[in-house]
Image (cartoon, rainbow, N blue to C red; front, top):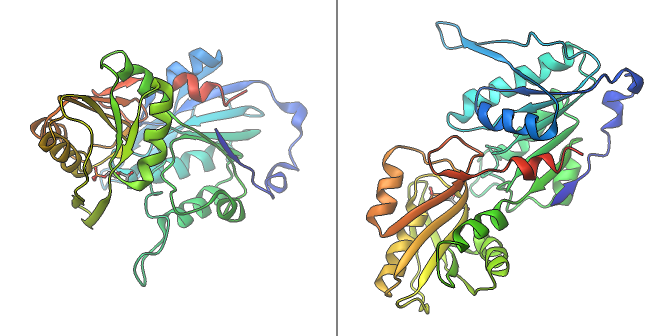
Amino acid sequence: MVVVSGKHRQTYYAVRDRNTVMGDIVVAGSSVPGLAREISEDFRCKFAAARVHKFPDGELHIQVTENVYGKRVIYIQSMSPCPDDKLVELLITVDLLNELGADNVTLVAPYLGYTRQDARMKPGEAVNARTLFKLLDAVRINELVSVDIHLHRLSSKELAKLTDITIKEVSAIPQLAQHVGNMLDNPLMIAPDSEAGRFAKVAAKVLGSDYDVMQKRRLSPTKVQILPKKLHVEGGDVVIVDDIVSTGDTMVETAKALKQQGARRIIAAFTHPVLSDESVAQKMFDAGISKIISTNTIPSKYGVVSVADLIVAQLE
Ligand code: R5P
């Protein structure tokens, strides 16, 4: 687990009387109601779903009818599919919860979107991750719990300077490794790129197996190239480990390279099933991947590993 502590957080809450806390309540956003309920049951606290509707022109109408006054609210919202909608819903709901007198708000964002663009690669390019944290600060979030956040270029130090929110990040990679470990015989863990190297390393440690790291070149948002590399995979089982699958191209190109070198069975294991359209999974199967294993940070039929326990462990 990684914890980044926000320095100025107390200024937001200093005016509130801590003795008014009447208990915790989970409030679910529209994205992962099933996971939100699981978390409330595991954490043994009240559950309420925010009512989220759209006006005819597409603007959101949000209502929280449960009394949140003086309570610690654990608001649960993932940011996929439709990250723009989910982000606006999140900002409006958290602001509302504070207006309704919540003592403090813990945002549980199992999948935190807008973090992939965490550095300026080209002149004039927006750094979405920085804007995201400014917005989260503005609506007053006390604590953020998330899973495998895609901040590869923004260090914890930089993040702490950027936001007042205490950030608790947990990883689902050990759970994913345990899950695939029951299906394969001493699999080699493969990271499709250097950023995923740490995930393959952790997964290999869990299973006591080996890992290797490929090199990826991103040619465009929808096209990647996996550079040739000699691997010891002939006749063996392989797990490609990553944090996110969006277009699926990273998995497809890696699987093709593994198949060319004689890999027997290939499983794709990753935390966030963003799966940008319906053809993504089929593309992965066509490339030789026999099974897709993911978590329930985003609703998907491949989300067989629940992150509820990991999240509850961070809620005290
Ligand atoms: C990249 O840094 C990420 O870890 C994933 O490898 C990437 O987001 C996957 O994207 P796609 O499925 O579109 O290739």
